[in-house]
Image 1 (cartoon, helix red, strand yellow):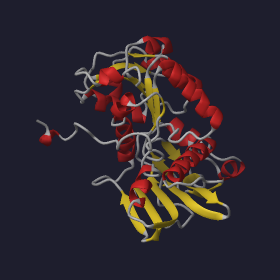
Image 2: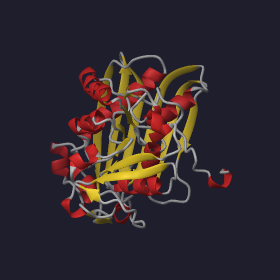
Image 3: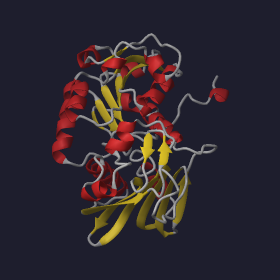
Amino acid sequence: MTSSANATGSSRPLRIVQWATGSIGRYAIGAIAEDPALELAGVWVHSATKHGIDAGTLAGIEKLGVAATTDVNEILECDADCVLYAPLLSDVDEMCRILESGKNVVTPTGFSFVKDPSLAARIDAACKKGGSSFHGSGIHPGFAGDRLPLVVSALCRRIDKVTVTEVCDLSQGSESPEMVMDQLGFGMSAEDASASPPALMEVMSTIFNESMDMIAAGLGFELDGYEHHHEFALATRDVEIHAGTIKKDHVAGQHFEYIGKVGDHRVIEFQTYWKMTRDIDQDWPYDAPLEYTVEVEGDPSVRCTLSPIGSDTSEPGLVWTAMNCINALRPVCMAEPGIRTSLDLPIVRAEGRFPTASH
């Protein structure tokens, strides 16, 4: 068992470090603070302006008595069971140092199914050294694009193709301007968008290929080829969003297509449509604040839609991402050392978060 396995069997709360306090980290801190089975052990931040600030203040809640730090060594040396690792971009060396320190890691930055042999070997070696476990979670990948298709597949006697469609209005979320404009490429000119893809395109290709690999592994086969395509839509007027202004004739919509193949057959597809406004120069058929649709074609074919209730923004997707990580903390801490995917863990669920049913 992992170094914290004995602790999970005791009555004390699991001690959790929140690594980064962006749009996911802030929700995670609040969820940790309200759960008596969890205790915030530390908070790492990238920005010097956040150093020394109370974690509750950073999360927009009451003070928690835990000061954020930019000192990595301070976090590595602290007494904690698990790190919820949620920076804008992951650093494998950094994650391996955390694992080697004896702390389990749950992250929404990808890694839902690590198939690359060299990467898997690095992470497994760090887990072995620290007696720790590693798990990639999130909403997509981590749930809508891999776990949910596998759940739906249980209704079928033959499967020909799996398609996951994500539709998202990102105009009113709480993601940083750095994420929206710099990494995701919104607001780019048509010339710049044609010359180079968004900065996160390579990362997205990797994590979505991993997610498709997990579907394939769960259904008993392997993919032997991948494709990805990207197209953008331009704003037909100036658009004000939470992250700034998107000028007319600049990128205000994006369509990403990821394809998993067996031979010449497209057997898994991820279709992603992101918009900042309805006023774009493409007539895309999808329009929703946030929606995931899983379609399993076969016998019988089945469709499942996941969408928030009572929200006209994509913000619930950030909460979903944070909570899928939070609710995975205990099973990951109880797991055997090594990389642990959703295929290895018991069903991740919101245990203890049903107050009217608590005794």
